[in-house]
Structure formats: C-alpha cells, structure tokens
Image 1 (spheres, rainbow, N blue to C red):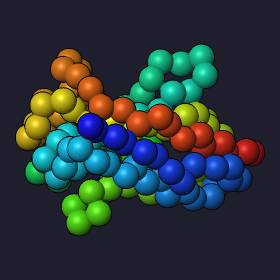
Image 2: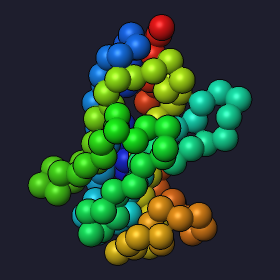
Image 3: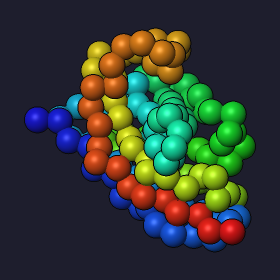
Length: 128
C-alpha cells in the first residue's frame, strides 16, 4: 500500500520560511518522479516543483529562487524548503508521485500521465 503523508505546514508572516516534508511508503522516492503541487482557492492546481529520478529539478516561475525541492533517499522523504514566502503562496500543498517509475525530464514534469499517488495535503498560510 502506497502512502504519502505531508507535514510542516502552518502560518507564517510574509518573508518567512517553512519546510514541508512528505513521508513516503510503498514506493521509493528515488525511483519515481515526485512533485509538490498546491491548490489555491479559486485557482487551478499548480505544479510548484518537480524532481525526476535523475535528481533534476524544475520549478514554477512563481517560486523560482525561493523554493527548493529535494529528497532523502535514506529516509524515503520528499522535502520542500520555502523561503521569502508571500501571501499569494497561501494554499494547500500536496506531494505526489508518478505511477510509472523512472520517468525523467519532460515525462516527469510535463502534462499527461498520472500522478497516481497523493498525500492528504498540508495547509500553508502566509499573512502580510
């Protein structure tokens, strides 16, 4: 059984930082394209950051230079360091994994295919 459990969300003032963690079981983070996605009320779900099985990372323009995605292979955990947070970063953040293993490049962060494994989400609130 595959489980993804996010933690680390919370409330912070603009300019602050948060570190999200996603503890994964049932699949290996190093063998699957992983992503952090966010849902902001009134907007479509957005892919914030991706890391493929080669360790290549891709970020949405809105978070480039502020967010950093990484993984711990020993702990089988996906991480998201969020710095210089802005009120528009407020939303629910989800970690997810592609169903198919060993996807790299566009097959990881491009549209199409399934992020078939999802966590329950963690709330991030940034106040001005």
